[in-house]
Length: 189
Length: 114
Image 1 (cartoon, helix red, strand yellow):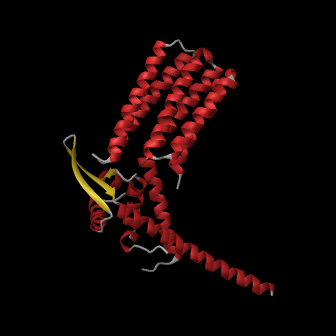
Image 2 (cartoon, one colour; image 1 turned 60 degrees about the vertical axis):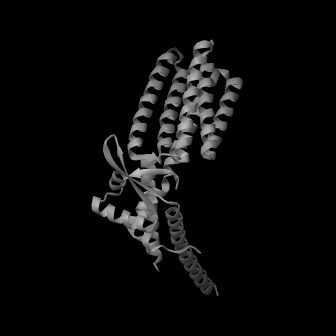
Image 3 (tube, each protein chain N blue to C red; image 1 turned 90 degrees about the vertical axis):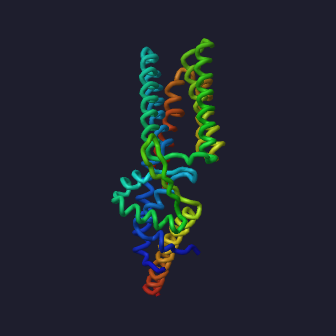
């Protein structure tokens, strides 16, 4: 089979276009990261500059984030599925259970221990990054591991070194990296 | 040197394989999603999927989800490898064409300089 360079270029353009379409259709994690990245960034910025609204804004942000995540999950559930009985299905169900238990314990600790607002934030951020690191290790996706470790280190650093600017620091080093990673997943070739 | 694949090179089948290759190995998509994303009719998409299935490049699974029939499509390992090899062959053709044209330009430049 012989083709001209022009035909090869056309075929490669078709591949690139189809790949981009597929990334937009299938990339569930990218959309979750975008939603929670935007939610965190908005929440932390308002916490920094309008601290009197902190409870109200986080209630709204978290409820909106959960609602959006559920909608995306339902849409993606109609578009794709993990092969039943496969190893990926087994790992996914275990990861789901693990995250359920993890976030359940975080809620328990929030009820039991008297934590300050920044401590509550750092608990949620590190619980989330912990789940990213575990997911990255189980699915062998180093991007999640690097993202989880990087956000954890930066947020802990900001918590101890810049307590007065902790919210702003978290918006930049916890919220924006999620947004950027989500965009990267949607646009990578 | 990678070789071109006649079955995959057909434009619709190329786009089908490119979309399926984005999914992780143990993930399936539906007939309806492919049909909408690629803007094809049922008959057209079905014929191309059948051709790719015959070649062993994808599997088609029919299942009932909430009492509704659903057709799931998944690229096989052989399909992924064949698609990647075809894509590499396309890139090699472009690369070698660029090299030939740049060598030609260099020779011309040399000619002018001499």
